[in-house]
Length: 323
Image (cartoon, rainbow, N blue to C red):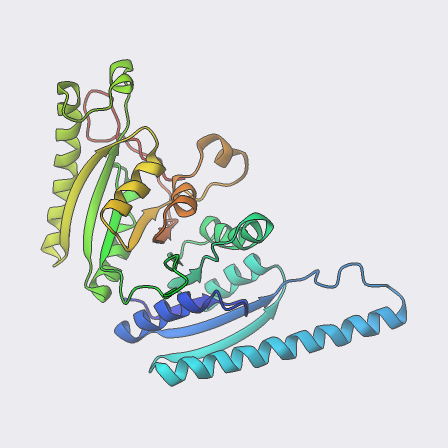
């Protein structure tokens, strides 16, 4: 179970959904909540270097820190008024992603809960880059909370009752399972294990129809693989179902399936690649995060293992490649 939960907060109000989720989880597993805000460096870039300019800059920095600290104290008080969880606050200055990563390591954080703002353009790029950096540089599970897109009732659901877990037969993908089991136990959720098959042969690409005979072997192998994993989870008291879908785009297939199932959460392991390797291999986790409408639990395992072949014996792979 989780013991220390970190919630990055920026004072915008968009972090409230993540805080609500973190408080709910903390109460159910007796965890401590750490609200952390980072004032990014460079806020006063371009300020005059003259003595007067430096004095004004110093005053502005102090004023900004005082304001942010006051907001953090008010937020913590609000949380304590509605929750029995232990709440602490911390305020730091520096590169936002780097400071959060270091803080999480030093304080033995075992779950990071962060809101996605649902913005577009420059704001989305800036805010998304913090989450993206955390995913790529930490091995702590990150719960990315997406509130429903409703102006009348913007709050998240009371619990994550339906969790979809994409698996492809690899050791990497399966390393998310212990984290999923912990969260499912806390939330009393049902887990759906999903295997996505993609067309390999020319005939399969021409006619993507699971009822046709050339898919029989691949679907049977995928179902057998999922059944084995599901059996292990059920022996641990988990409620588990399985499904196999066929699609030409892995991320889209996962998001569409989760939408049809009215899932509350998608849980996925990731290589956490960056730079040129990321451009070459792509990132299923990132693609799903940007396109799917539900929250996500993302994990970069401590020891990232190269992808293994799927159960199919004829060279056809499920080929879900989290990156």
